[in-house]
Image 1 (cartoon, rainbow, N blue to C red):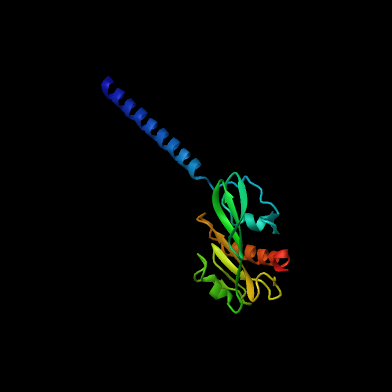
Image 2 (tube, rainbow, N blue to C red; image 1 turned 60 degrees about the horizontal axis):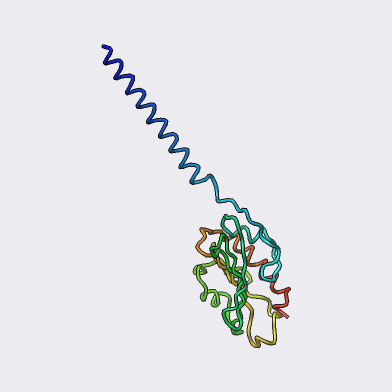
Length: 186
């Protein structure tokens, strides 16, 4: 009989150890996956590549991370792109691009990723999805260097997991208005 009691005790101890290990594993996995989005330890400046915009609107479409950097890129004669990177990985692009006069926002948006089947604003100046958007500046936005052209604003997230149409729309409209009030439109 002492052998039987001893076996029962070992089974109980073995079960208790297995249960403890399972609980510890579950707690570890839970901590790794996190209860929410990764923390944003960086601060978004009020001016991005010379354009002043509400930092909260920009932060809403950026992923979590420790550091934020920005760089101005001019890929061609009429485009100015402000690229934002989080922890060294490109996360967001805010661009100003001149297009031939007579285009529509819907037509121009076809030239940019992630705008397919986007929502067109009532005034037809903005097209946006949860990842990108295109906005047309007002007709008075003219510069001598770009005759017979209209300035469009493009907001594009970069493989960050962000998919928030409302946040993209708010940033797109605010950034477009900020560009309209800047030297880019004079």
